[in-house]
Image: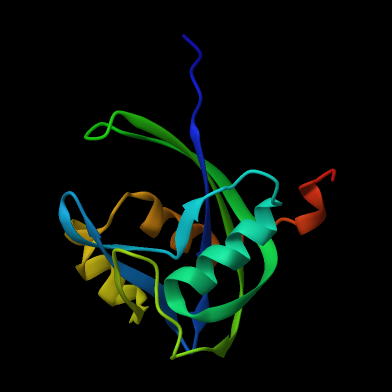
Length: 148
């Protein structure tokens, strides 16, 4: 048997002291997450982050840095995730755009609100990625090389 982690991308987006999260339907009920999703075949990691932010929040996203690479095992799903977390700017909002299936909506929450809702986080990576962002962790995007 070949073991493979699920590779995902996520975006930490801050504006005026609030962070863009999504509220989504999961098998455990409504949960919060960063705009995030699976890396698809034949796309770069940054392109995946741009796509996921648009699909889940209706915002255009400009990645500026890689915050970190995180391994997390979900015991409930028995799945290991390898998350590439980016930070950057949300630009144009497209309110007419339909969000991905399962996404209830995009919300801007303060750090205190994020902490207060920890029981509704999809994973512990949400708070960890925000904490690393606030700690100033930033790596250049050219660290990631994508050959066409």
